[in-house]
Image (cartoon, rainbow over all chains, first blue to last red; front, side, top):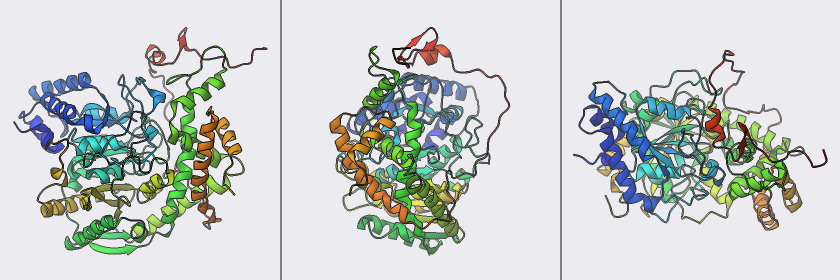
Length: 499
Length: 99
């Protein structure tokens, strides 16, 4: 039998449907891989072996009974710990929620179950998804499978590391300022932030409600599309959910043809501030797209230079409001309840003890930006800049089908390097933030390695509800690059001396 | 001049219900000053006549029929509470002693 961990999700789903591999064998093989390598990586915070194997056994019974299931039935998945799963510990990377077992399933989890996807466990992340390195997890950092001295990106570093180290073929991430795409870029995997509102936020522990979007992570563009299709769609339980058909992303991933497409290079997301190797891989991707028949157009989005500032006012403002719910009264950590402190004092003591440094910084920045006297100059102005950035996208998409840029300004930095320099950390999201502010869809795919052997990501951006274009372009680039490299980039990766 | 003073940070921590010790307040004051100075450039963007965007979607109220549906299981919810009594969340006193 082929080692199930080497297969793509599409291949594994096909093998399970055909009866060549059982879902239980697939889950057990991935747990064995996790046992072998996750000591060095720390992608997972919790493994739900019992629940996953029971779910896999159920899939096997249904396959044996001749039931026709979806393309991902029996395929294992790693779930970011910011999505609630009933009865399974969910922490969002915070001490505040240590030991908490949610009383309900996120809609994404319900959709995964309906698709027969087997949830192996919960992945590590920056606390409440605030960070670009997974170092802000209260449970210790995740390490990059390409080089364990390096960060795996963040906030969804655990999900990206799990797929790139072959511990799961699929993972769910959430992207508020780049938390799916930046980890994908620095781990050599694929990640998509779908159009805002196209994947339900019910059961996604809120960081910044107008920016948060759950999405798929995988090793191939087709696998990412299959997962995208499984989780997307209208949810009446999320009032910001779009009631529109899901774009035909799987069909697009199988239609890897960019001939005649207009591809725009965003001038403001290249050049200064971008590592030379990152720029070089990007320039090669542009040349490749030209060879594949795309028309390359240069576009200007002048307001993108203000995106970082707008984001670091809007996101903390919404966070300061959303995280007010963690008050130690109904769930989570409670400190100081010894009869001598009032409820208000217990709240303040619990929050001081339960939140880490980055969360405290952002809550205070948000509180500041929303306070009277500063509101107009900070939050109000940031909302206007958000309008200007959206207009830049609209003008650009009037001329081109998709936009491209490097996903990140640099490859994976060293663990500890930016921990005490918040602004240096924030700059990791320079190129990903505009799509969160405007709500359009965006993808990161591997574009090669830098001179240190670390992955570089190519970002593709498409208009809202045109997510299928990401997959069409992504699949075309992936096919051409794999041919050039003699196989997928991740086949070059060895973790802990294995494979 | 710093964008934010230590006294202001102390006030923010109080507003945000964060009981921070003095050394932490000192540490955050320096970092918040750097962050706020970095984002202050946003006030220079000429946008007087630009409408604000609070959300990427044109949101309108979303209604559903007002029907009775099962809620979360009380025992399951209270089992996750820091403290519970008599089928309710137990919280510290919220009023001063004198009442």
